Amino acid sequence: MAPAPANRDDLKTRILPQMTLSEGSNPLTSPFPPLPKDLLPAEKAIRRFAVEGNAIVTGGAGVLGLEAARALLEHGAKGVSLFDVNPAQSQDAIDAVRSEFPSAKIIAKKVDVRDEQSVQNAVDESAEELGSVDVLLCFAGVVSCNHALDVALDEWRRTLDINTTGSWICAQAVARCMIRQGHGGSIVFTASISAHSVNFPQPQVSYNVSKGALLQLKNSLAAEWARYGIRVNSISPGYMDTILNEGEGLEEARRMWASRNPVGRMGQPSELTGAVVLLCSRAGRYINGADILVDGGGSVF
Ligand SMILES: NC(=O)c1ccc[n+]([C@@H]2O[C@H](COP(=O)([O-])OP(=O)(O)OC[C@H]3O[C@@H](n4cnc5c(N)ncnc54)[C@H](O)[C@@H]3O)[C@@H](O)[C@H]2O)c1
Ligand SMILES: OC[C@@H](O)C(O)[C@H](O)CO
Image 1: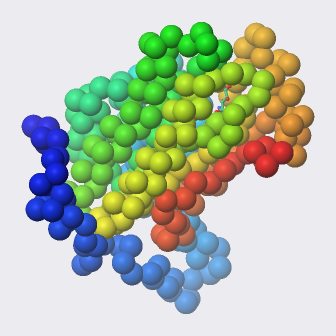
Image 2: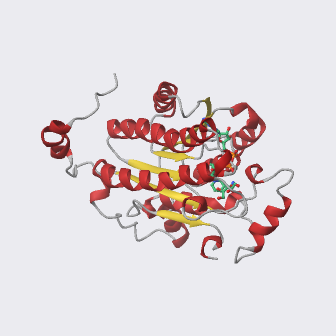
Image 3: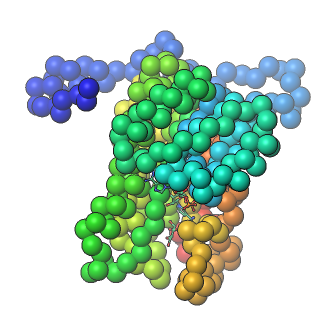
């Protein structure tokens, strides 16, 4: 049953008394344990960037989500559960990842991140089928480009519902699961350069707002959930060379995005994975509440 909304009395009697750091099993209260001295340097590097346990990746049938899932598996994740409103669109690509990692468990679930009950069921099933949920990557998202004067309320609501509220619904369901498990975890939202500045030339007010809000969602949860050993961070990709940024009429915009970038090109999906792995591995243990821009320097131009 959903909890009742809090009132003013709850603040003193229930909410503030719970704002204490739970030590004991909280992995964040102690520093990264030293690696055994007799390991070879390469083995130390692997251990430092190892991803432990299992992950849920929303938008997991999309270009960036699936590439991030592949990177987690490369770094030792035992299994991934891909949540997507349309997993069938990428059946072949998902099968290709399955054959790359034959000993990993790779599940695809049809989930609309706006549907709280469907997310809750899929999180519970994933925990059961994989054995645990230790990482959540939120990639599910839609882009919406329109002149601010023409944006219909439905278009505005849909963009914020999927990009922002959908990430919140998934984070809350997964955090409850991680707290039950008792050993913390890592949550990563996908914001964007659009969370930091206004894109050019395309007008996209609802998208920009949906991604900007994710940064404050990340900050708020990072502050609250560290006491359970859960770190919450975000990545902010620049213009990546994916279907989101393809299509008729976008040729001139693509040229402009590349020319306004210090490295002179758009990013490749695999170029996001270093930041994702860092945030989900032991090496990222003291990174909490951070946003990593992966944009070739485009946002400083
Ligand atoms: N491609 C870029 O240049 C870029 C830049 C910055 C941020 N991003 C963000 O990265 C994320 C992934 O982008 P991408 O390029 O891989 O796009 P993509 O379209 O390939 O992937 C997005 C996925 O989200 C899924 N999705 C959409 N609505 C959903 C819903 N209601 N519930 C569940 N799944 C849903 C889609 O089916 C799709 O598989 C998005 O959040 C996007 O805003 C992308
Ligand atoms: O901000 C870059 C991306 O988030 C997005 O792909 C682009 O703005 C879509 O036009």
